Length: 116
Image: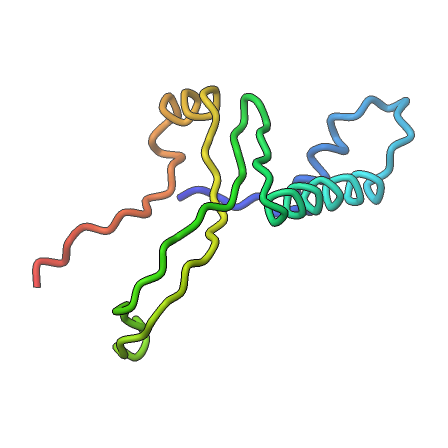
């Protein structure tokens, strides 16, 4: 099963890659990461597409509303308006690297039919 990498662990990993002569602190790295996430979020919520070459593209797409949608919790039929859905499309390099990954490192998210 794949392990999670938290933001704190990411900060520590980035800090470890810095040269000893660097004066950058963990707090500054934390602020930079928060700033990056804030900029990406702000851009996509303002209708822009954020493309990070070699990594992927973040965007908000329009999902059409439906008049006969079902609330999965209650089973009630409800009307859903058009709405935005945040999405990520991996870039070519990330897709290729994922394709070549060791299969033991990949989280098994697809469930087999139960046969009932």
